[in-house]
Length: 158
Image 1 (spheres, rainbow, N blue to C red):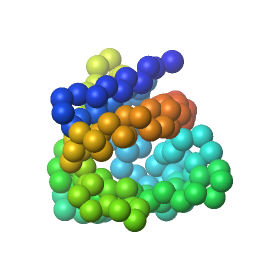
Image 2: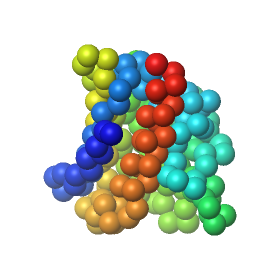
Image 3: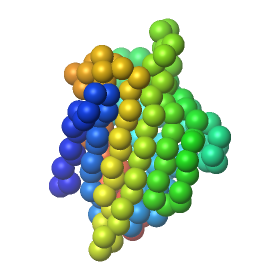
């Protein structure tokens, strides 16, 4: 099984790395095509119920997930940089009551070697306090569970 690595870095960053047994083109598609994201994105018990993606620089995206106890979580952002199939830079905002000043920047790179892809995602938060709150949250568990489902999707598409 591939190991998820989540590390707080610098003053305001969280760096996530994870290897997938698939070419980066497939991983890139799974990150950017709504019909694929709907099949894997979310922690156990959470389902992505809305997925809108305008995959172009300046285009927006929005995900809405429902949790096991009826919770709803929505996130949205704007694509800043797209280099198919190796790099995505996007803003990200968790849509909740108090979101002012809490938008963060996510840079995802995909590098391939011998048919395997290393995903590296660096999230830059507006403050250290927000970064630390995210690091204390269930983000690591949810991301790990989600990436296991992505492994399964990629194994069936390879």
